Image (cartoon, rainbow, N blue to C red; front, side):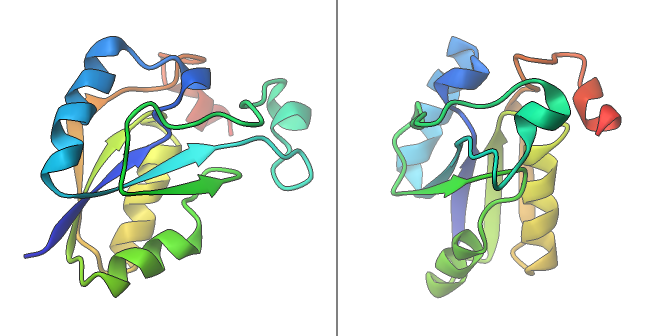
Length: 139
């Protein structure tokens, strides 16, 4: 089964712990890897208006990946799914930040696309903004 790694939003504005960045950085070179990076555009996703917080305008991933996809909001961009399907990927290992929102949304999007997501809990955390994971419940 061809597999790839999806790194969800491991970027400076979310303050990932060093152990997570190190763990993801060790795994990423062992297979094809893609990363998402959240960037703020209030016209696309009203983070500031609805949450009183916004991601950085120009953050970059903290872990090198074979391909990076910029996103605005919780879901990965549809181009990410197309990229994985074009490569013949069947299983996607998912790790990252925002365990209660973006990370789960990515898993469900992969599932709906038939890409067999496997969520890697050991290198996943909730947001530095909300370690309690109540942000997802509030939304």
